[in-house]
Length: 312
Image (cartoon, rainbow, N blue to C red):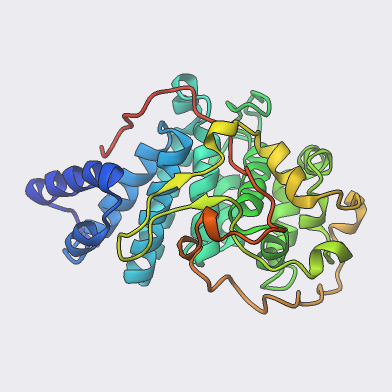
C-alpha cells in the first residue's frame, strides 16, 4: 500500500481517538481511501486495542469490520501485517498489559469471521511468530504461547458468534482449519477446551442440542457500518471469564475426546453455514438477542485504563 505522510497519519490518529468516543465510522472510512491509510489504520487499531478495556476493544473490532467490508483486498494485506506485528510484540506488551493476548484474540477472531484472515493462515502465522517455549501466565492472561493463544481465539469465536456458528466457521474449508487449530492448541490446549465445555469446536460434528441453534452474536453490541449504535459489550460489568462464557454457550455440551480431532473424514456441513460467516456481527444488539442465546459472554476485563499505543 505504501507509506502514509505525516499529515494523513495525524488525521488518522485523531479520527481513531474520536471514534472511540463517537462510534462514527464515516470519517475514518473516508480517510481510508488514501494510499497506505488502510494499513496504517489497521496497525494503529490493533496496537491500541491491546491495552484497552474490553468494551473499547469490541468497538475497535467493529471499526476493523467496517474497513474490511469497504476495502476487502487492502484489508487482507493490512490484517496479516498488523497481526504479525502484534504477535512479535506480544511477550513484551504482556509485561504491562496482561490482558493483551485476550484482546488480540478478539481482534483475530473478528478478522476470521469476516474472512479477512483465514484460520489456517492465522495458525501458520502464530506458530511462526510466537515462541513455543513461552511461559504460561494462566487463564487470567499473560500467556504468549502458541497453544494458549489458539485456545483464546477459539473461545473468542464462540463469544462473538455462538457455538454453532463458530463450529461451522472452523469446518467451512473441510479439515484444513480444524487440523491446523488442533495442532496449534496441542494436547494442553485441547484439555483446556474440554474443561471450558468447548471440545466440540475441534470435533467433526456438533453436539445434537447445538445443531438446531441459530448462529448469532452473544450479548455483544457494536457499532453499525453506518456509524449508528454504540460499541460496548453488555456483559462487561458482569466480569465473566472467557471460560465461563464459553461454558455457558456450550450449555452442558457433551465432552469430545481429543482423539476425534484428527479424523480424515470431512465433517458434515452444519445446517446454518455452508461457508464462511456472511452476516455482519454488528447488525445485532443485546436488546434483540434471542432468548436462547447465552448472555454475559466476554473476555476478561483489562486491568489497565484506556490509552493504548495508537500508532507507532
